Length: 188
Image (cartoon, rainbow, N blue to C red; front, side, top):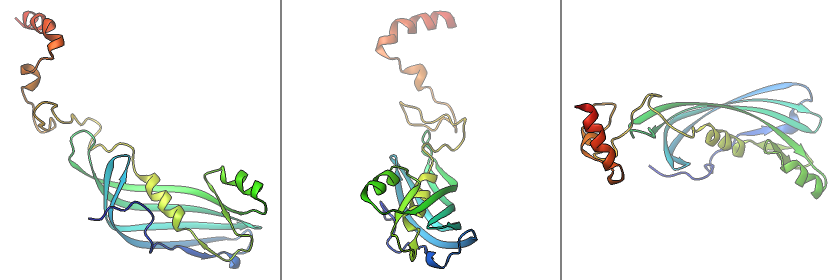
């Protein structure tokens, strides 16, 4: 499966922003098939399903406010035991599409990560970059199959959720060997 590092070229979620009436709320829904692997923070998230995008848009004079919601499903390895975990992703973000006149104004506006600078004349507005950002931000920092996941044995690699091994009893860190004798004496 292909690794996807940036927004797919075919992703285009276009609004005719010039046709939006000020103060009125508009709803848009898209469903796109997405297949590939997104690597985020060293974890591979595998997608092979539809992604549903829900957008609520309102125009306030020249500014456009868009609430972008996203629902997706993917698979990733558990951070502790490496078993494959099915993940249901759900994310909502609010973006403010704002025109600006001067370069100083543009720099000030772009300092806010939820503000997107647009051209003065409102025409077509593509939300593709922000939908991609929502997808990436929906990915969890840590994937767990279960909160109580025991992980893998650091010596033999056995999945400790499926059984126990004797590695901890056999392996002793040489720095702790004096304590090993103490531990044996306590057990007897």
